[in-house]
Amino acid sequence: MHILPAADLGIMAEHLSAHKGIIHKLNVYQRMVQSPQLKKIIRQQANAMQGHVHIMLAFIDPAYHEPIEVPPLYVFEEKGYENWQNGEAGENDQWIALEVHSTAKQMADDNFSSALMMKDMAVRNAHVEMALQQTELLRRYDAFLEEMGWMYVPLSDIRSQQDTYRHFYQAFYS
Image (cartoon, rainbow, N blue to C red; front, top):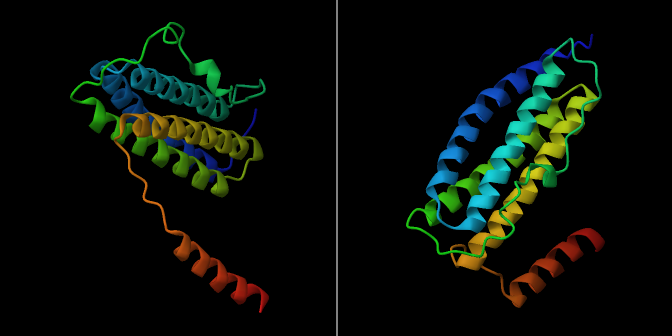
């Protein structure tokens, strides 16, 4: 029997409650969107989060004695999506894409922050891996949003970069 530190148990209890709502939201959004590409990413995120639920429940179950590892993200991909062509986006696709992008970012941040507070190393490492998976999903949402022209990331100019470099170079090496 493996007894968890109270901090880890509390953090995972909070995560499980959040996951229930987020998984439901992702399933609703996945049915609403028309873009096959967006549908695929949302489905993978919902599947990954459901996998994360199983992992956390295994950590919490004192009778569970098998090794616990976060499977790689590709395990959560569903077959059949790879043959879909890029389809037209529906009227809801843009706001849903922006929302699930924000959700992936929040989940990555939440998992990284939680991992720093966790005491059990296996639980901590699993949450770092979960955060990395959400970060990869965030990257996929970024690519989709950029492809659709729905995201704008302003760039600085060369002068601003040079001025910033000079300032901090002098601050550290003068």
